[in-house]
Image 1 (cartoon, rainbow, N blue to C red):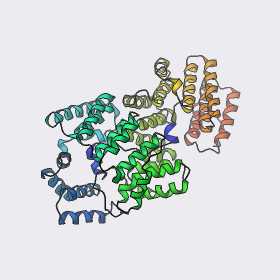
Image 2: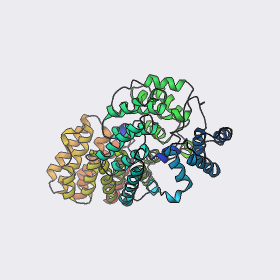
Image 3: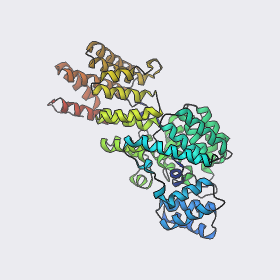
Image 4: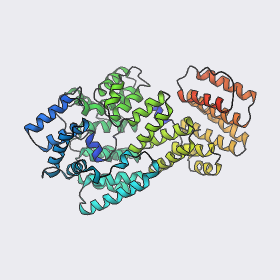
Amino acid sequence: MAGWVHNEKNRNVIPRWRDFKQTLQSRELSPIGNAKPLQEPLSPNFHTDKIRDWEATKSVKNAVELLNSSIILDDQAYSVEAASFLRFNINAAKPLKDVSERLLFPAEHDDSFIQLLDLDQFDQIIGSKINSLRQCLKHNPFNSISWIELGRLFLIIGKEHAAERCILVATQLSPDNRYISRVASRFFTHTGDYKKAKQILKSNIAFKFDPWLLSADIGISSLDNKASFNIKRGTELIISKNYSSYDLNELLSAIATVELNSGSVKNSKRLFNQSLISPNDNSLAQAVWARNHILDLEVNQGIFDRTPNIFEAKAYQFFYGKSWGPAYSSTLQWFIDQPFSREPAAFGSFIAASVLEKYDEAIKISNYGLRATPGDFTLLNNLAFSYLKKDDTANAQQILNKINAEGLSEQYRVVYLATRGLLHYKLGQTEIGGLLYRQASELAGKIKDKKLQLFADFHHLSIQLELQKKEEHLLKLDALVKQLAPLQVVYLKDLVKNLFKRLDIDKPINI
């Protein structure tokens, strides 16, 4: 059966890794400190303040802040003025000049990779960008931003060692750059080297005073199932009133997650609601995830409307709202936004294979996800499951043989046993297949995961009914439907309805 275990159970606030231009537009790189909390940072009043500061003092700092607010509020006149100033100012850093030139002359700098929705064009566009960056680095080998971007592209196509070399060069060139520190920590989080990820953050001279760096440390520590020693320091920054709500949004969300995981729901709710005053896409997605545990979080449509790049949050929002098509489309956009991350590929392959039953789509996104995260269980399993649903047992068996079953968690082992069971059914070995499905169900019951147990039982009944509609199987399906009624398993209820329709089972379904 298609798997999706990790996302539903847990999520942590780990830095996003986008290219420099997108990150700059998100205001994540704006100067911080001594800023009053802003209730509406995207409002015209906020932009007016930046214009006034710019008119009073035409400095690089004020130009960057004006450019950020102009882009967000689509003020083209001031965007051009600020970008022109940065492009020709001798005190502006090279990356700022590059971004300004791209804004002023967009036709010469095609960013189609960011807008791409067709996975089949990935290779061509990434290859072109890698060649372009290599040429740039020949002329300017000290450009740390170009090294980081080259590393990101190498990681997307599965060249992890080449990516690591690029990342290490960038951190040596710019150890105190917030962008470099955060995305380098994201890279080593991806490779599982949490110690190195946190070491890079702490080596930044601004670590103790920068909420963006502290939030990354807390989130990575949570992912590593370890307590961060910087939660107290993060709390001090929050209560200091020296930072804007936007600068604190990921820090608030990271600490809120720690509180939630420790059982302090009241404190967690308060911190999550504070993070939603001025969220980015990462903290908003975290709040959407947390809403499964804290039902009355203040997540409203207005927050969605004013927060850019919310592909992940929309994917979960649509999914739990049973809008399967939009959920998959949002997941695909999320994957394109973060193509080296296993999460959107895993979630997307689950929706495509198990809910929408679009097996070719599931195969495609699983294969792309495996390039950056080879050996990932969920992607390998969902790929094998999709091949099996297309009756391609040869490819399915080859994929399943790549999985180290002994190293799987109990939840993943349930999924693995069920997929193995399907393989044997497809090979005509129904007794072995039935035994494996029963083992999957028993293990899910042993670990007290009722939803996973029902999922395994459903897939077992599904293949049995497809082979032969026996009364005993229909009775078991009736019993499963009754167990589903009180549970919030939206996708499984729809799968039952689809099965009834596909097999022409003419009976009412009360779920």
